[in-house]
Structure formats: structure tokens, C-alpha cells
Length: 475
Ligand SMILES: *[C@@H]1O[C@H](CO)[C@@H](O)[C@H](O)[C@H]1NC(C)=O
Ligand SMILES: *[C@@H]1O[C@H](CO)[C@@H](O)[C@H](O)[C@H]1NC(C)=O
Ligand SMILES: *[C@@H]1O[C@H](CO)[C@@H](O)[C@H](O)[C@H]1NC(C)=O
Image 1: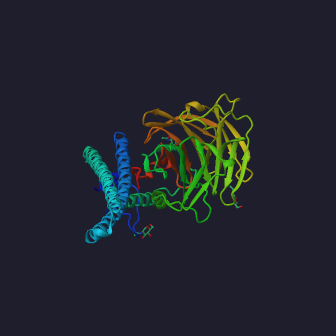
Image 2: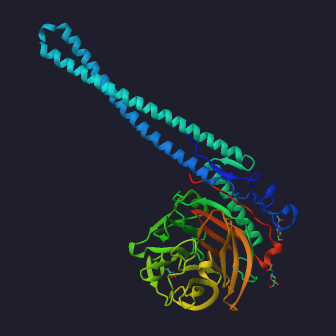
């Protein structure tokens, strides 16, 4: 029986960067220049794709493999027993021949003993026969299960024949890396303004770029976050981090040297938080190799510097623990980082649940300044900061989110906007902007998802590097 583990990638055609070598080595790419466009051939995640069916198929595959292992283990045992019995029978045969040759030397008791021994071997062989036929039954049912699984997979393949391609793990990783490279080149060519705030805000959010199910390979790890350090320390510019858990808490963080290792789930560091440092909520971030997160005891903010393992906590007077984002409990403090520094948002009793923005001084870990917005936190699904401007997001429908409110801390002006974008899965616990690549990172029901952003000044100069990759859970 062959149990193949499949990987799904929805490809509109082939994935390539630099179509026809356009953005190949030594060539210049320019936007809108016809053939000179950066194309990361892409595909859209269809919300109708039965990811759940696929997960079921894969879980079945895993179960079958597990059962098979168990049965193989038993078979080995049977083989050992069988060898022992054969030896015993040979020995008995020799003894019987001996007895026949010299029958006068033996008495009735000796024959009786011999009969008992033969009966014992007989009983053992019967037992073994029963076990083996049990195993045969198990093998038969495994065969039936795996056939059913194969059929289910074939059905999935047929249904999505046109757009979905089943790829192997190696191909999958290769495609992921090609997309990442394409995206990075695209950013180099078309987003020369990373770090600049010479724009008037976000005007478009791209399609969800779905990289992966989390490193726990477990869709039950719905609460978490992932992304890049927003102010990386030297030699960690390409580092990614991930933390996930089955409830709205943070207990550990994994670091990956680069995107490839994130995909391969090869972390180079795994920090388990000291039991008295365990955090709650999921709107934490990593900045300057430091984790900023929410704690319950005391109810407030925590800062854990992974360079020194120094831990600090702060309490902000007046913050109410009543106001969380509606999708998940405990999301009281939402950390954010942008071109201008470190921020945290929350609601106070005094504000009646409307969100407050606070600027945090990174060195002293104290609040520098506060701004009162007019959005009521239970109506906001998440929030982030870009260039000192606060953006609030709300859920429109089963697959749509909307940036609906912005507050500029520079001018103290707010406004209602409408920039909609798609979610990949139902709920998300962490959404943050990263100023190092101007992308949004979302932790969406266990999946790592990111979004490309368009700002008001860049609109005419940008070709969309629309690229999406969906992976299943098994690597
Ligand atoms: C790329 O652009 C630069 C600056 O415009 C130019 O000097 C260079 O020759 C171009 N390279 C190629 C391969 O077209
Ligand atoms: C973390 O510790 C390092 C080493 O002392 C220090 O240089 C860095 O500024 C600290 N980071 C933060 C955010 O406090
Ligand atoms: C872009 O910014 C300009 C200048 O502030 C403004 O007039 C215009 O309405 C903005 N466009 C969009 C789509 O927001």
C-alpha cells in the first residue's frame, strides 16, 4: 500500500518570476512597461475549495500510517515467536527420534512429559494463527480505508482539476521560495519607498498570500501570530517568528533564520516562556529581538528581550480588561510597530470602550503619549499602525474585512474609510503591519497569511505581485 502525502497548490498556470526572463539577472524591471512587468504568476484562494475535506483525507492518511506501524510491529513479534517455535519443534523432533531409537531407556512419565510439551507448542501455534488472522483483518480494513482515501483524494483532484495541481513536498517548497523571491524582487523594483511616510494612507490591500499552516501542523492552534522583526538586529534581517497556541495565550516563540526555514519548519531558536512570564492575548509583536505582549499578573504589558532574556512589565492606569476584539477573549492590549516606533492600543473605562492609542518608549517601556479615538473596540476586529496613523478593521461578511477607520496621531484627525480585503479562513487573532516590507501579517485560524499594501502615492507605479499559495497541513 502506498500512502502518498500530497500538497496542494492552486496555480493559474506555472509559477515563474520574470516571465520570459524579464526580471532575470542583469535586467531592469519597470512598471507598466508591457513585457517588462514583474509577474509572479498567481492564483486566488477559492473560498469554495474544500480545505476541510483535504484535512480529513490527510488525517486519515496519518491514522492509516499509524495503524500500519502498529501492525508491522506486531508482525515482527510474530516472526520472532515463529522462529522460536520452529526451534522448539526441531528440538522436540530430535528428542522424539532419540526416544524411538532407545525406547527402552524411557518410561511412561517421559512420554507424558513429551506429550505435554507437544501440546504446549500446538497451543502456541494456534494462538499465533489467531493473532495473524487478526492482523490480516486489520490489513484488509486498512486497505479498504486507504482505497477510500485515495478515492476521496481523486474526487478532490477532479473537482478542482482545472486550477488545482497536486505537488510534492519538494515542488511545494520550491514554488514557495520562487514566490518569495518574486515578491522580494517586486518590492525592490516597485516599492523603493519602504520606510517612507510620504503618502496619504492605504488605498488598497492585496489578495491574501497564504503561506502555510502553522509549525504545530495543527489547525486547533487558532490563536497566535507570525511575522518578521519590525526593527531587526544585525544578521537577523531575514528572520521570521511564529507563536501559536490552542487558547488565547502565549507560551513560547520560535525563530527561523529565513523564509525557507519557516516553510520547512526548521526553527533555530525555540524560547519557552518562563512560567511566571506566560502571556495572554495574541496581539503581540517582535521588535528589536524583543517580544512585547500582554500579561495578566499584573494586568498589563510585558517586554522580553531575547538578546539578554531580560523581562519587564508595566501597568497602564485606567485600562479596562472588559474590552476585547469580538473574535477572541483576552485581546486587551494590541501592540503595533510602524516607521515611527512602538505602539499599543486598548480601551479604558473612562473612554467607554472606545480605543486609545499609546506611543511606547522602547528603552524605558513607558507611555510617551496617548490619543483617544472614536471607535468602540468590540466593533473592531483588529487594528494596526502605519506612519503614526491608526487603522481599525472590521468584519463585513464571511470572507471580507474592511479598513473602516483611521486616526492620524500627527494631526489628531480621524476619518471613516472603506478599503476591503479577503480573509482566507474564518477568524484571525493577530493582524499587524510590518514597516520593513510594508506588508500586513495575519494569523488566520492557524494559517500564516500576508497582504501587500498600496499607498496613495504608489498607485500608478505598481503592478500587483498577486500570488497566493495554499498548503495543506502535512510536511
Ligand atoms: C538598468 O538601468 C540602469 C539605469 O537606468 C542602466 O544604467 C543599465 O544599463 C540598465 N541595465 C540593463 C541591463 O538594461
Ligand atoms: C535588548 O538588549 C540589547 C542588549 O543589551 C540592547 O542593545 C537592546 O536595546 C535591548 N532592546 C530593547 C528593545 O530594549
Ligand atoms: C490620495 O491623496 C490625495 C492627496 O491627499 C487625495 O486628494 C486623494 O483623495 C487620495 N486618494 C484616495 C484614493 O484616497
